[in-house]
Image (cartoon, rainbow, N blue to C red; front, side):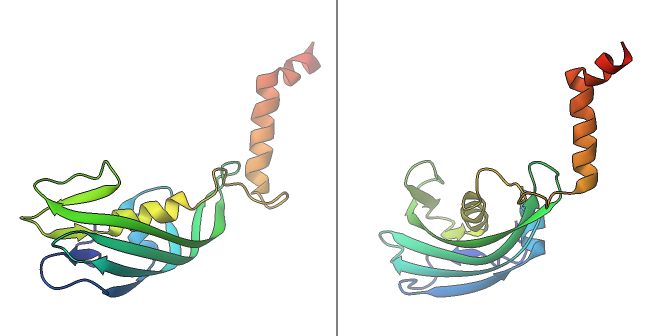
Length: 160
């Protein structure tokens, strides 16, 4: 994802117990991930507990604002984010993230947390992304209503 390795943590290079890293996540981050969220300003703090010889738990706290398309009118909706999640990581033979613990190959010794940061932010969004009543894009709502009435046969009844 990020060409300059901003979100990669070296599990072998130093004792990471007690490590803290802070990131200012912006539109570029979301565009590189290429997911539902395309814009935002998020402050993310990562705390690490444990050691690479056993297991490291990363606590990831993200707070800020993101923009995602409204499910009804497709215009951007502004959403406040404040989420704290954790991920457990240990070294092993080959990469795996299918259980409760992410296994990173010992030969690599690095974990890229960018996808996990994005997923935690995305998972904190509500299931339905809809503007408050009256806040949707009026032109889009008019088009939707036009197409819905045509599909329901309302136009056909008027012409008969």
